[in-house]
Length: 158
Image 1 (cartoon, one colour):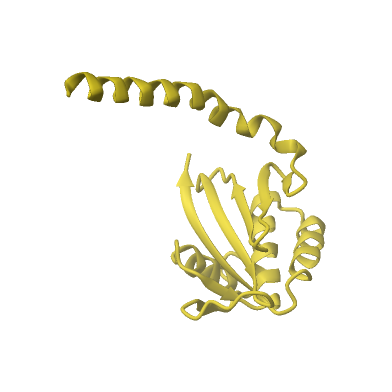
Image 2: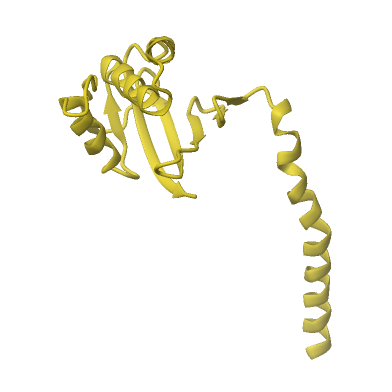
């Protein structure tokens, strides 16, 4: 009986050892994946389900994992509806809106197209300080979601 168990255990160990190098090869060719985008210093993956997944590095917050779902294609009933205003100064209401957003970690949030524009604008102004770049990116990306979007994030850290 003990020899049978030992034989099964050794066989399973051998299979695991043979399979582990195959699993480790995966990310080496990630840049060849047509659904993967590496831009602005972070990685994005468009999943076949229509969900966009992002890993965004932040000096202040560490890496943030975002998930986006187009409101035209998905409905999430328990999502919190948030309004984000433009942060034009350090004391503007948009700053408080951004702080409230980042307090809702790992929860689905619905943002209208306008709120998503403001979220992107505020984020790019904070990270780059370039108003033209912030407006261009916020306009181009928010126009992809005319019905709004659902977004969820998790702080991964450094």
